[in-house]
Amino acid sequence: MNYLGIDTSGAPLTVVMEYGGKKYEYAEADCGTRHSVALMPAIDGLLRKAGARLDDFDFFACVIGAGSFTGIRIGVSTIKALCYAKGKKCLAVTSFDVLAYDVPDGTALCVIDARHGAYYVREYEKFLPTGEGRFVQTEEYEKLCAEHAVAAATAVPHLKYLCDVTRGLRAAIEAKAAECTDDLGALAPLYIRKSQAEEGR
Image (cartoon, rainbow, N blue to C red; front, side, top):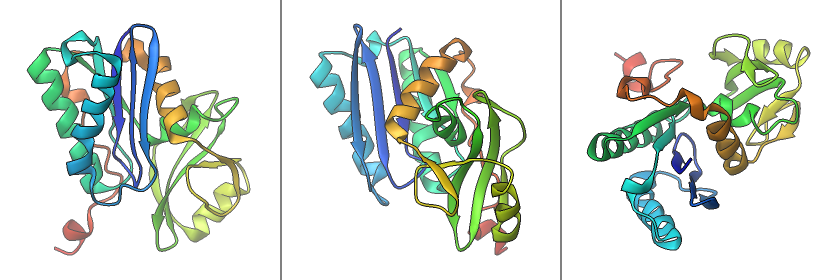
């Protein structure tokens, strides 16, 4: 299948594409807060490189979280708009999926650094989640690390698997491709906790 997938849920900007049996990718390790201005040029650059058009793809995929509130909204809204405009199916992938699919046996505690001694975590066994994603502080995180191998895309305590986001995103999309749907409601942002603004109200 021909697909286009993006991840704007963290500091990196990642775009992966398969078209005509060939794989293409764009990865910017630290996009910072520039996702909104960098995403479409990155997509356009890959399309030009492949000689493809958006109409040529079977589905579009994006990471729905957990991660940066703003980054997630940018990715979800962009892919929803492309699906709507081109009449394409969509595929939702979590940032935990991206990590799990870059672990050899898909079994790990998948961790996203939420900063200030806090983490988003979700357990996986053989590429399938065994619990809900949740927000934990250092004490609970330390207990979980004693029970699981830790997989993350950044340096976190007790790290066993340093994951490659580009490779994990592609693997997750290809493994979950059968789940793509016409229902754009599937692209609902995965917010595990309230934003700082909401918590301050």
